[in-house]
Image 1: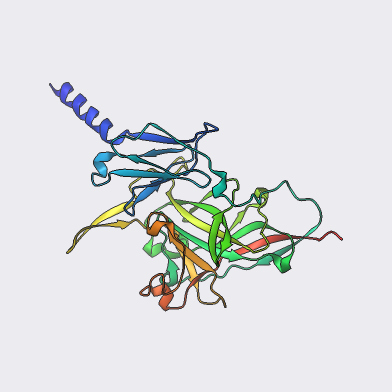
Image 2: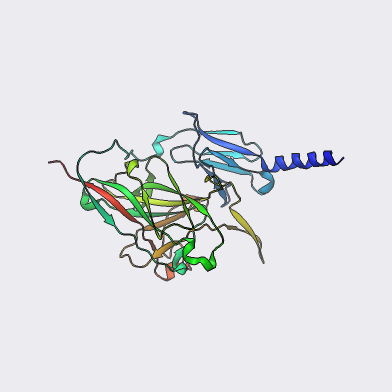
Amino acid sequence: MKIKITFLFLCISLSVYAQKFQVIDEAARTPVSFATISFGDGRGTFAGEDGVFDFVKEKYADIDSLHISAIGFKERAFSTTDIPDIIALMPEASQLSEVIVTAPKRGKFKTKKTKATTHGDIHTSWLPTVESEVAVFFKRYEGKTTRIGKLILPINAETQYQSKGKGKYATIFRIQFYEPENGMPGKPIVHEKIVFAIDQEAEKVFELDIQSKQIFIPEDGIFASLQVLGYANKEGKLAQSKKYREVKTRRGIQKISTAFRPLLPFTNQLSSQKTYVRRIFLNNKKWQVFDKTYNENSNLILSGSRNYGMGTIVHVFEEKK
């Protein structure tokens, strides 16, 4: 009898926790890394590098549909009662900006640096959530052919706040690029995926080398964005975990997006507004300028800290005569 009961509980456990799905490219039949899985109500998650994600109906009883999307692919939607094990997305090149990634450019270039603007005040730092994306605008250097060699990312990692520490962690981030459109991030620019992790021991200014990606800044400039994918597991891969916690309030149970470390220091030291933000699972993925129109009650905005001080190291090529 005990064996039968144990087997029954094992079956129930598997039915609740072992439901995995994979997102693939319908044409190439290869995994679509870090595809966006939206639950359609302000919640969601991301597939891992192998295109695999977890979804358990019993854990999300109030969800009736999933929306699967990725840059360069047509979005698909499924009822949560009829999700195929393999989800194939059709490439849609028309959604992408012209390819800026080119063959390695030859010739002499000068290296120029735009310093990052940072500080150590946690009260004027952005607390990233799993779907949050922060984009910063950059121009070509003096209008010349400019390649991005490194992105300089100011962060406030855990070692600076040991008294507030909650143990070790590694947060996985993704870098994406967009062409400007009406002053905001517009069409995404196709490039190789840029995904990396930051842990509690990271330097205050994190330098990310992307020279090999051959990203050139268009004539009208470029937006570089930093997006949170989630925490890494012990193997260094994206952890498939519930990204929301449930909090009891007078209005009932509220689902609060889980915050992810490290913090991103915002600044009031820049002369112009160049930072835009969005929430992937809210507001139809719409970009918004980070000012009072985004959130008039934000402590960051009220303090004037409206920009993320991302910097760059760029290669400026000599113009042929």
